[in-house]
Structures are given as C-alpha cells and as structure tokens.
Image (cartoon, rainbow, N blue to C red; front, side, top):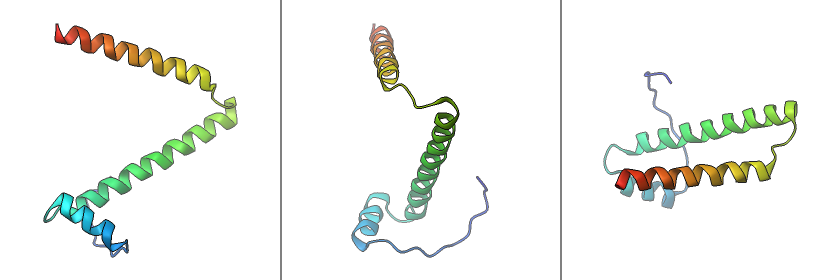
Length: 85
C-alpha cells in the first residue's frame, strides 16, 4: 500500500459515521475507514483466489475443511495448555 494519501469525500449513514467517530475519537475516523476498506479488499482478493482454485481443482471438500479446523483447534488448545504450565 502506498504511503501517499489523498482526501476523498464519501457518503455513509449518519448513525454509522457517528458510531465510528465515537469509537475512534478525534483524528481516528480516516484510519478506521482505511483499515475497514483494506480488510474488505483482502476478503475480495481471497474470494477471487478461492474461485480460481475451485475452477481449476474443483470445489473444496467441506468435510476435510472441518476436520482440518478441528485439528487446528486441538493443537491450539494443546499449545495454550502447555504454555500455562
């Protein structure tokens, strides 16, 4: 991402903008919006990568994904348990 910044005018619902302003305080609004847009761009790029991989290799096996997630959670629990000892 570039370090050059430029001012833009955006429109958003007032209640949302006020919620962001209350959470971020003075001067934090732009940084908050920038981070939110960056996260959305990452999600969209990830979706594009997944779509391309599925087009080439077929859909992801959801059961295999759930098994991998369960194994990662078990590893996390085991690792956090040993760190507390």
